[in-house]
Length: 386
Image 1 (tube, rainbow, N blue to C red):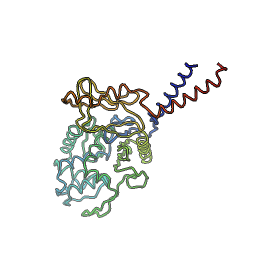
Image 2 (image 1 turned 60 degrees about the vertical axis):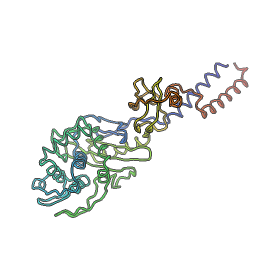
Image 3 (image 1 turned 90 degrees about the vertical axis):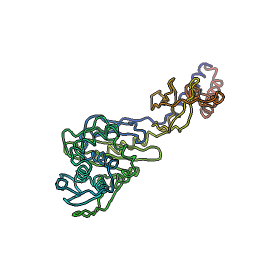
Image 4 (image 1 turned 120 degrees about the horizontal axis):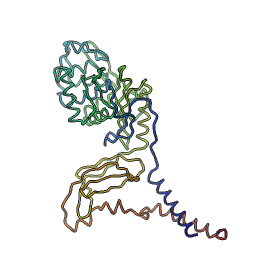
């Protein structure tokens, strides 16, 4: 009988721990877009992807890269004189005309809000004298500053060219980098803007249906659309709630409806299952006789309602893992010198993480002890049946 009681006791304990530690489990999504990716905007961690590293044509998502390059390398108050070449640019426009003078900031607004291809060419000519030279400078910037590895642009706007390509992952990385810039964020989230051009006076309205409210999704904070025949429908979207900031990129959807449905699925998925967590700057860890400190605030992504463990290696690398032992993030800690008596007050990760005992969970103990007591009473009352 004692053996049966112990088995039931362990089963109750295991079941409760499993339910308490991880209440949600991500599911596979059905996406229509050929390529898509969901990323934690803060940590850069990929939360879901479908062909996210496959080479794709970006169409006007290119303009996210052009905008952040211009913001970081140009003077927003510069006056740009429009050339004949700009006036004759194909595709979506803000209808710039030769000789017109516009500030660089206003061109960036026209580029992102109304997807003006002519604004993109005007930016390129102003900053690098030609589109081809601008493309070279842009690619260098994206590789060296942003850290992309599978992107090659030949123009500032995304009109089709065989050698103009990227991946959903790289576009997400570019978008997350750009969102760190306050001016970019302000333009990226703009729904309407008065445009007082020489020959076109209007109110620019964002093309992103979620951002302007035609498709309701209150957490959306910014977006950019794109389309050429060869790329299909492309869409970049940023959104946030109190737990996490998300970036979604979808590429090569057959219809706008598919692109937005996929984006909604990915945002729902991200908000339901994930949260961005942190460890504060200055937290210390003890490994053997060595003391290590977190040199800056550490951000990482984890499943909602799940516990994580922290382990420090011999060389001072902090590894954060989930309950299944899967690595979430790793960071290099800085060694510090402290007095011997202070070491006793330093957090020992081996004791806190590697040597956790089941009796450290009071709520579990109450439930388990109560369950065990009921089981024992049941066995005693029916002991003649054994």
